[in-house]
View 1 (tube, rainbow, N blue to C red):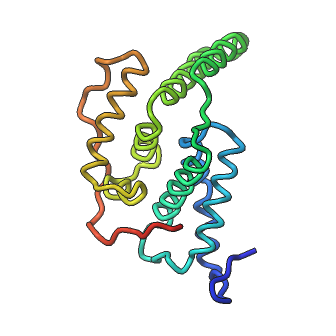
View 2: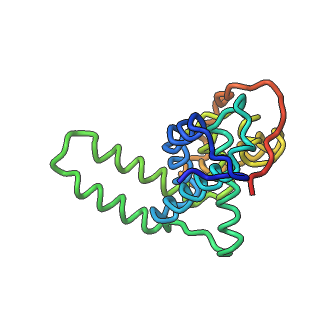
Length: 201
């Protein structure tokens, strides 16, 4: 049911934009929590908060960035309540990679290698800190600019840049490849400086 604020229902265009953006929210949620149930809970909490605070949304801003900011805050609130972070253990990922490798014997050449590489990356991401994992996925997967990352995380753009540099170094270490990938990274598209979004409670 659409959320109401002082008897006013969230308008249909807003609800449509929200529905279209939810797959991106779900993908982002998977970077914050590896547990499927936790991902579902986070996506639902994000949607409910967005509907409850639809009047705070500026239509001239990017709906995706606004929703990712809500998801980030909802995740932090859950962690504060639980005082723990639910992650798939690296050892479990290693076992999954081995099982996948053994199960790929009859498939097309290269399939097992691709699966193993993907699981290696997931295991490496599980080893870095949550803050490093989050900034890596915001830039590399969601392709947000530094300014947009700053909005989502609620930190200055300079903090985003330094955190990203440390996150890339940590990921290389987790992958056991300290010398790889030292070429200059792609700089995300920048956006004109503007107002920062208020935190949605």
